[in-house]
Length: 253
Image (cartoon, rainbow, N blue to C red):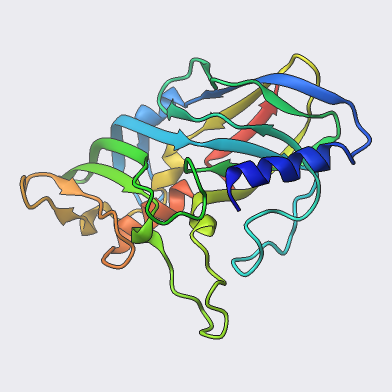
């Protein structure tokens, strides 16, 4: 479903909630404390760069407990809000970073949120939009791993279907939409929706010692931007930025 079609779906849902239509501002903030931290695996990490591209935000009245890969990319339930403008968020900057558009929604309760890590058609595998840029150094004992990561979500992330009889069961939109993010808020006229990003949680499961040395600079290590050839660190970081529970939180101000 293209974003334009999705917007029409949202507009129809907004008219059926019975709540009042509202407009609101939207902003994102990072976590300055993430500049230096220790992961659950015992790596000391210093981040010098952590940027995430957010193409859109959608809010829903429903937080389904059985959301799975085989379901539609669109959550069941009624959508309560949307912010249809992209923003590259500096996840180390704790100051407010406003989205370039006004959000629209209703004052019905919101129980889940979606981050769309793409622009344009969410089903177009040809997109080369960079969604993650990260740089830093990880260390453990006397060993160190200066690293960088540049991730896209296109044909390099297309997953084969679990069942050959269901060839469309793992569409690319599943890779690009972070959902359902547990949320508990109610939109109101003139308020501000805040997205908080904590990049420390992207790296929780990463084994930095298994990173691949850069072919151009052996003293540096690069995360692989291709699921087919990825190793443990690459998969762990990719899954980390797409985790619905932990790295992302929405609040109303």
